[in-house]
Length: 244
Ligand code: ADP
Ligand code: MG
Image (cartoon, rainbow, N blue to C red; front, top):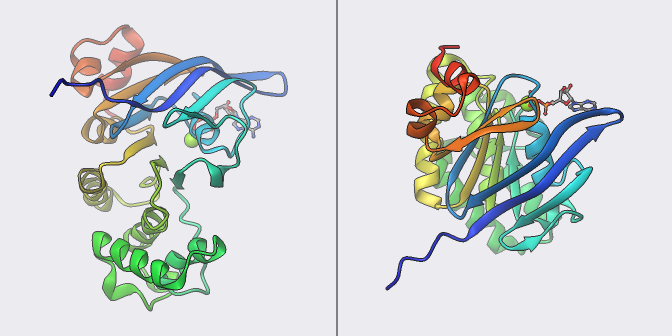
């Protein structure tokens, strides 16, 4: 068997974004291979969320193309892109049980009831939240809520998971344990994951590919070892090297 290059999962071609007169993303070109864990890292306001939201289809691109699994999605709705996004604000439905929170999106998509039950059970097992299924969000800890939010993404069986600072509302100890959970999830599911954070430690420990952003431009793309040991410039060296 010959070793084929991994196929691209997400491709950005000359992607730019302006809000009115303010250009915040400047002609980004980026290929994220199938199955990789890519982390967008950079200072607050550098455009990480905007870039992720354009991949998700929650924000229109001003210029350029986005493809997911070889299919151009630039003008498709979020629901048509094969992605699922996890935010830092968990946005769970407070009046619904955990089980119903997990099932809700699938019900809206008219997924058959048996299929919903099977996917919800599988997600609950992966995230170890089976004992919580009849609780409501108000009866959960922050970490448990974040697990449910991730569960809502898992049940959709997306090609690509998008995370926007999913742990930044958690205390330091919980952040570490959830980080380990997310790394395990990536190993078990094998999906492409794109993860946004301003936290260098999170980036260095989760990523197989780090994308360092500054003012809407890519400063460097590489493995954690590459960007740490062989930074392309002083900005990358300072940002990756310095403690928060
Ligand atoms: P990050 O996630 O890296 O902190 P963002 O992508 O949220 O950065 O923001 C990048 C830049 O775009 C910032 O200057 C921000 O103020 C601006 N921006 C983001 N969203 C909007 C919007 N809806 N309208 C106007 N400006 C925005
Ligand atoms: Mg952001």
